[in-house]
Image (cartoon, rainbow, N blue to C red; front, side):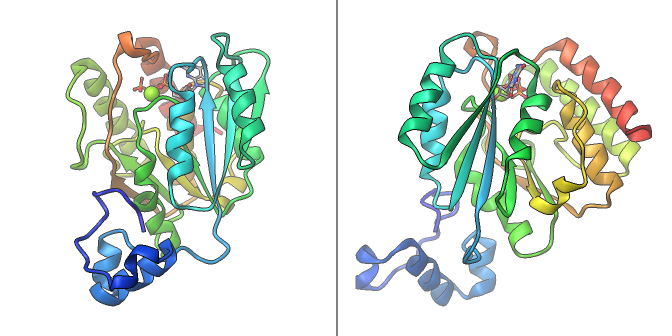
Length: 277
Ligand SMILES: Nc1nc2c(ncn2[C@@H]2O[C@H](COP(=O)(O)OP(=O)(O)OP(=O)(O)O)[C@@H](O)[C@H]2O)c(=O)[nH]1
Ligand SMILES: [Mg+2]
């Protein structure tokens, strides 16, 4: 069961609760609440052989890389962490060497030259062996405590792909008006061309049932990968779900890098990948 208060119901466990494993706690919560209510609260058992592949593109995230890895590892889900260092020059690479050395669950792949988020995802996804692949940015904007919520529609068989929406009711930092407007326009255009009704096409949290990615070739090296993936999963008739996630957006003084030129590239990619491959 997730430790996050967002998912944790007020359940009175038996006195053995203190020594129960997480699996036992999930079983007991489901017994007390009933499967339907427990599922609504994000309490559900993971399949026995479940493994999550966390693909983390990283470019110059020296300030946050260790903390985000700590938070990812803390999630109560069997997993592999596939970090792709996209040619960082700020000391991130040295930190990642130590992380890989000290943690069996962490593999680091290195691009000698910076290529962009899309290229980093291509490298990471090629090495993923889990049942579900989730993209995890290396800053602290997205919260790994949302993983159980993101995985649920795939695990219970409803979805092939799940997007975490920053605009569906969870706590969200209030700032950057123009950034949000651009986000709205890009999502609207992508929806219109792909016949979808997403609220947050550009979200960093995208989870894929692994088989889905076998049929998709990522061509974009840049942030244009977000509309590219969206167009391609729509074309493959994937069953797409959105779930609310929390979001602690950073601003430019805190290291945010995405800007107007990225929005223009995204605009072009929405059109390009709707009509081409
Ligand atoms: N900016 C940038 N990020 C990259 C690159 N390659 C990999 N990344 C990683 O991709 C992830 C997303 O980049 P961010 O700069 O946080 O941008 P974003 O989160 O998509 O967008 P905003 O948060 O809205 O600015 C981070 O983990 C980056 O470290 C690259 O070439 N440029
Ligand atoms: Mg970010």
